Image (tube, rainbow, N blue to C red; front, side, top):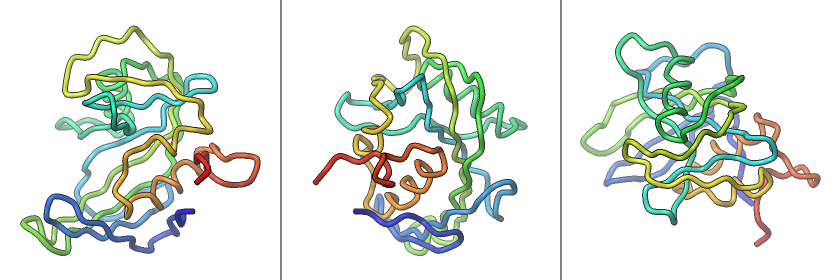
Length: 176
């Protein structure tokens, strides 16, 4: 089983030739760094909305802010654009703060907000880079995510904060 992120404790991962240290921070205030976007665990009844670009690898909908956009407005816009879903209510789960420690963005510090969003799923009309949407039972959603190993503890924490835990106290994960 993967570990779960602890407040302020870095986990590491590599992507695109760069090494990052990323930590979880609880709400309400974001840690220092450049605002880099929002992602949400979109819950539609008993299912979670996942999105992807190839119909095989899946992630949570999310994106980057537009100039002057609040976190909540960015969340609502990104869920409409990426998941064709309307946010009916939401709760801030926490923040991830990533610091690039090796690579062409060394020294860059990015902060992303993570949410649980109750959504109404609208007809699927993809308009941007996301070309596929899938609704999965909440207990299976975490296991369906395509994540770098180093980021799994942060996503596991987000799912736990969102209350998506199985009867065994573990985040929805398929047996190994």
